[in-house]
Amino acid sequence: MSDVKTFLRGLDEAIQRGTPESRMKALWHTTDLMITGRYSEEEIWTFGEVIGRLADEIEVATRAQLSKQLARFDQAPVNIIHKLAFDDEIEVAGPVLQESERLEPYALIANACLKSQTHLLAISKRKSLDETVTDELVTRGDQEVVKSVATNNGARFSDFGFLHMIKRAEGDSILAEQLGLRKDIPRHVFQQLIAKASEDVRKRLERERPGMVDQIQSSVTDVAGELQSKFGPVSRTYFVAKRVVATQHRLGNLNETSISLYARSHKIEEVTIGLSLLCALPGDVIERALLDKNREMLLILCKALDFSWATTMSLLFLGAKDHRITAQDLSDLEKEFGRLNLETSRSVLKFYQSRKNAAVADSNARRQSTAAGASR
Image (cartoon, one colour):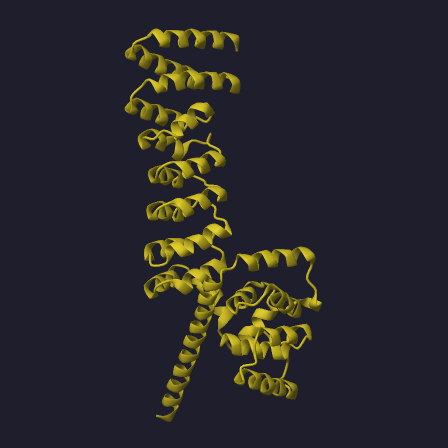
């Protein structure tokens, strides 16, 4: 270590007295020496100090060349990598922002907050991106940056990042399609995206992601035998409940308060009928939402109806096995409910309604076609 320090100290003194040409030679000599040798982190840092001083004295083209050389060096001095990353010239900053593994997420976030859109674009092309970094990129980046992040398979997104991307995708069919094609997009986010997408984008996503679309469709259309009704055969009490709840609805008295009261009283028939009327969805769809172990659809419906967490919680307990939910699961559900957006949840509800109406129309058309064929 002492030999390296002595050598670099002597080099540093020579730099101060040297010409631009000698400084250039010193830069490449020092860089080559560092890359080809085996040094400790402390020694590498010292190399970085000298290279950093040399970099201050050289023109943009040479700094850009240095950046390219150090970008893929996995032991590059962190101090010089940071210096290059925050250079105003993108020719200098770009290579290390895009490729250097020596940049920690905090440095990338700071860069995204302080530098230009071209700097953000370089960051968006990294082999991997932490959720905290993508949050900044999708918030601060322009459309080019956002589209670059959307197509980066190594980028990880938080729920905030995905939901923010949905907002950015409104009116931008290219971004909507890029986001919808991501393999890591959660189902509830895909539902919100497709609910807002144009007809052309929706059709393309249905072709490209049939499995995801089928999951959504199966949750909002009738599938014979898919879910055995908890009620069993339709009983006399069901017809009584339907008449009472329908009357309430007709008089304008069916609301969150009445649904909450039914739920706390464990009146699942009244809850199912009431939510069916308020959501304009068939009872079997509501039943599926109440009883499904994946509570996502129920949370979306409650948010779309602008229900409070207290009412939502009573519905969750109603549909839970033995009406029990662990404290941890309940806390997670509350956080998920809090993250949902009212507007996008209502868009998803409209999507549910449109898929159901389309399925009913298709069923009626097939029935009429069959009847017409039989009458010939």
